[in-house]
Every structure is written in C-alpha cells, then in structure tokens.
Length: 235
Image (cartoon, rainbow, N blue to C red; front, side):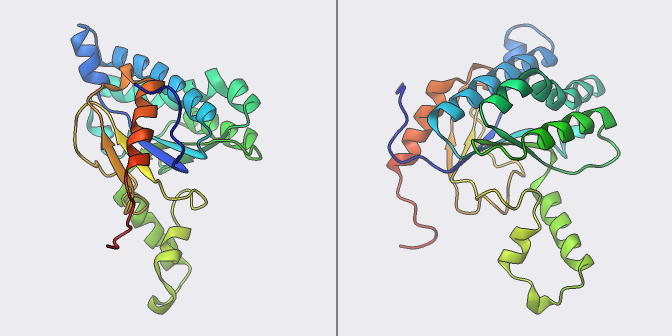
C-alpha cells in the first residue's frame, strides 16, 4: 500500500469505525476488548491525519442507536471519549489539534464524560491545526431534527429558511462538509452518519476491521479519492 499522501487531499475525512466486535470475536474475547483495540487504531489514524496535513477528521464514536446495545458495552463506550482526550490531551494540544464534539448532550450521557469533553474542547479551542471531531451520542436524523427545532425557536419564517440556514444550525457548523467518508469492516451502509453534510461526499468501503486499520489503509483511501472526478450532480 502507498505510504505517501496523494497530491489531491480532501479537506475533511469522516470515518465510520466499524468491526470492533467482530475483531474481538475472532480473538475469542469480549466485545469491549475490540473497542479497546479500536481506541489504539483511532490514535494511529489521528496521528496519520496530522502528519498527512488533513484539515478535519470526524469519527463516529457512539450513535444514538448504540443505546440499544448490552448495558456493559454501552457503559464502556460511554467512557471512551473521556479516555481518548484524557490520555492524549497533552499531545493533541502540543500538536495544535482542535477537538470538537458533535452530538446530543442529553441526560443519558454521564456528567463526568461531558466534563472531559468540555475540558478538551475549551483547552484546544484556539488551536489551528487538525480539527478532530468526535461524533458522540450522534445521529444524522437527530442532528437535522435539532437544527430544525433551533430554527423554529428563533421564529424564522419559511421564506427565511434555506440550505445555508440549516447548515448554520448543525452541531459543528464551522466544519467543511466531508469530502471523503470511509467505512471499515466490509459493511456497505451509511448508518445515519452526517446525512446532511455528506450529500456529495465520496465513499470508500474497506474490508479491514477497524482495530486493524492503519496509516497505509488511510493513505490508500486518500489515493482512491484522488483518482475520482467529483461532479456534485453535474455531468
């Protein structure tokens, strides 16, 4: 696999990190073992994104549908964002990474997790390097619903609402739309991820399970992206 980035880099790459459970099952281990291995894969990919010069990276950490998973697994996943930022905060800050989070802040998310997230966001707010966005307690339909509610709460008339209005009321409106969405593990689904923002994104589906995903897999996806001609609905 190629080790160097292609000449034409996307501004914003989004990743559905899929396959942790299946990876753990193949090792004869509990699903949480796969999530721990997936955390290490995330560190590798963030490092690669920084080195390659990406402007933004969004990862699907926990979806609004994941609450239906077994209680033990949900409890483990709830702690992951705090673990990620706590373990790597000093390094992320040193490397000029800005951390942002997209998702609902409802009562199901423990206050301790929100505290870790808020601290990471505040401490890195003025950094100008990679924007690392964690989609946590996130769903694309929920995000659009929340945007519409925010618009209605402002009392805007139908005539005042256009696509720019909706975009401005999304969870992280300052992020550019993703140019490339990668999904691991061989599954070919969108799974309620960035439904509004990814309208014209390029998609790359790879068979590699997320815990085995490395820099070379990211570079291969970037290389595939660079070979494509983006038309945005045109001829």
